[in-house]
Image (tube, rainbow, N blue to C red; front, side, top):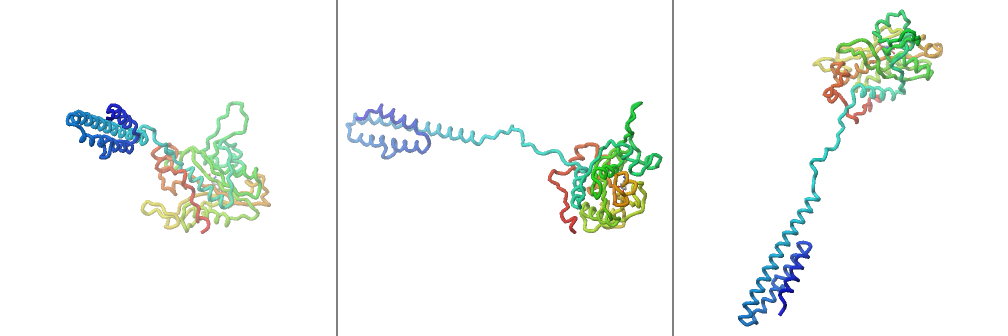
Amino acid sequence: MTDLATLRTAWLDRVADAADPAALEEVRLAALGKKGEVALMMRELGRMTPEERQTRGAELNRLKDEIDAALRARRLALEDAALDARLKGEWLDVTLPARPRPRGTIHPVSQVTEEVTAIFADMGFSVAEGPQVESDWFNFDALNIPPEHPARQEHDTFFMARAEGDDRPPHVLRTHTSPVQIRAMQELGAPLRVICPGRVYRMDMDQTHTPMFHQVEGLAIGRDISMANLKWTLEEFCRAFFEVEEVELRFRASHFPFTEPSAEVDIRCDWSGGQLKIGVGESWLEILGSGMVHPKVLEAGGVDPSQWQGFAFGMGIDRIAMLKYGIPDLRAFFESDLRWLRHYGFAAGDVPSIEGGLSR
Ligand code: DAH
């Protein structure tokens, strides 16, 4: 007769060694299945004496129950292990910090400066820059504004303080971007096509004026550049910038010391419904000053006025930003209020749309 103790150890070992539910099921069938080892041994009971049968039968039943219990315990253990493994693999740390999202926006002044630069770049203008603390010669004299000229007072100039005995030439915070015209001519000579965007300063503060604001200067010098070229250039610019098919500009005779003749330029628009529409309507809105560069200004820039002539214009960047994007108060531009910046700011991907604007 088979030794049941050895058999028991062998089966319990096999149960313990089963590595997964399928292996465990194989062990179950081999031990307790209809043709399993224990079942076959049960069959032998028939050939035994009643006494033998009684003891052997009870022993076999106990063995069967033990293997069965071991199988159940092993199955539960395997299921627990499988669940553990799954939990480990699918674990999610909800305390991890979120992925960073860009929070800043591009200021409307930066956006519009980019737009203006891109449009003029398409027309062959490059960008020139000059200092914000400027000598009064560049800011005034070179632009045909002599010391006694009333325009000096009109500019509400910030003057740089000078200590006693400091005899460096007087400096101001530049009141306009026009001095960059002189610097560009001196550096690059003629012919020339530049725009000069940048900060300018005047002592002034209300809904449409701040002590610091932005202008863009334009300058084109050639052998026979005329007011007609100025008009075309500005019309092309406005079409592209305001993204409208038709624009109409009105040149109004004016006076600037640095241009002759001079004109202020208005754009046709419509204010009905409180919404500004460019290119239609019965209203006119002043957007810039312009003219033919004064011979004295060419001379100050080292350009011979008997050989060269050209046009210039100056435009408020903040002002055209307010018009294009419907921003009512200039002062808010420089208050750094996050709510305002989020509302009026631009995403990094918002590139100037000049597509079609210039080709129409
Ligand atoms: N510099 C002028 C200002 O700040 C604007 C201006 C007018 C610039 C006419 C020009 C120009 O170049 O031709 O008010």
